[in-house]
Image: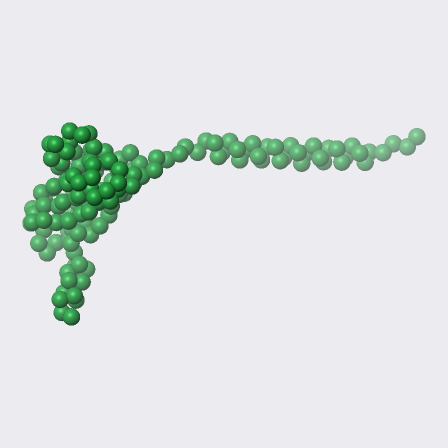
Length: 149
């Protein structure tokens, strides 16, 4: 009687390939399931402007925003952080959110000939809703170029 080991090696090879495939699929499956979803940033249309010595941020459309959101005003490389709730009108605070048509009015003093930048940050999603230069040397050059035509 002759003995053949050929069938045993094929079986062992098949079981090893199957084991490797199952373990790789398990690692991939577990790593994908443990990723926590991040909260999406709210969609809002915000408009920033300077009126006299005040910076105005107007909510022009989109979702109602949290009153505890932050906005950062940078004047000539000096950063100041503010909370939206402190600069809304009293009637705007009553509805527990920053809604369409409501304005944030923040007094910053004289900003003539200074670079002014504005960022609004949503605290729930930790994302930037608006980041804009309100005033600076590039804006002045654009204005001068338009008036000289």
